[in-house]
Length: 400
Ligand SMILES: Cc1cc2nc3c(=O)[nH]c(=O)nc-3n(C[C@H](O)[C@H](O)[C@H](O)COP(=O)(O)OP(=O)(O)OC[C@H]3O[C@@H](n4cnc5c(N)ncnc54)[C@H](O)[C@@H]3O)c2cc1C
Image (tube, rainbow, N blue to C red; front, side):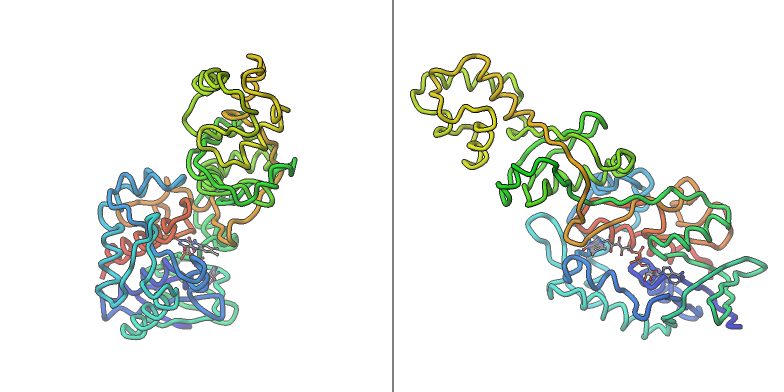
């Protein structure tokens, strides 16, 4: 039996390492181990951000930052006042890793390599004598005076137990046995597969649009990308995250309504079209509203107006055109993974966590951070920020 651990951390990912290093910096004498089931640690960090690791997002107002978390918005607001983007940047900078901001706000190491983050963590873990035990799959835990943690071959005992095992159904089951409730896991961050593939001829077109799913009362606005299989881009990814549960319930079959003119209403659009009647040109050859030409031609053709002159268009023609421009409806059936990046919505119920410490309200000396909790964000570096914030808070909270 391996005894006398001050703290054992289950899961050698982003949240696990951030907890271990910050705790070891605060309590250098504490005996700390990370138990990781895989042969290697930090596997998700390695592949994250296309191998570049999108560490955080350049949003420096706690309230604004919290708005990027469909699950966790309310709970993370307090913790963000203790540790958020600026602290993350400074933390890495003080340890020799400089981050840079890209145009869309995503932040990466200046080396553009996730290995920089991994090296930083591994060097610090070694410096502070944190034991990293790979191929240690935790199969059960229980509590007597101390925590007992079991792998197939070994048993460990520790005063404090930290769960940073990500989206692991087995670990969620262990948490359930300790009295926690688990929100069922469903996918988040995905793109939509379209039924009628005609519009996919326009793959590659991107524009600002408003997207609605009336049946589920979901609405999203932002860049929309037409792909070979349907729709993607920030407007869709945001919707997939905010609607993760409802979309799962609908079995990913629903209608989306797209306003290609973004904020322009149907009525304002119609009035612009009426004014266009003074033109003698064909509707298909005179595109309005700065829409991409190919998209204009596609929409106009869908209601057979391509060769009609503007002057000959009836009110009804222009009503139809206003409808396809501001409320095109497409049937969706299924989803696709976004750039291999996926996140799970679900996990330990947030009501059962004290967000001043990230401690369990169900068990003493038990702490949880990262994706094991029912917290997830839209794409952009926010998911790692959740792992850093939780890990840091735990490291400040555990007793000597
Ligand atoms: C391809 C991809 C790219 C991504 N890119 C980004 C990005 O650029 N920016 C961003 O913010 N987010 C990104 N994400 C999301 C981000 O990676 C996760 O939110 C984050 O890794 C969660 O950290 P975590 O420590 O909670 O869990 P994980 O990183 O999943 O770590 C959990 C660890 O626990 C271990 N474990 C599980 N069960 C056991 C057990 N029983 N015993 C021992 N060990 C166990 C696992 O093997 C794993 O190593 C990406 C996700 C994917 C899939």
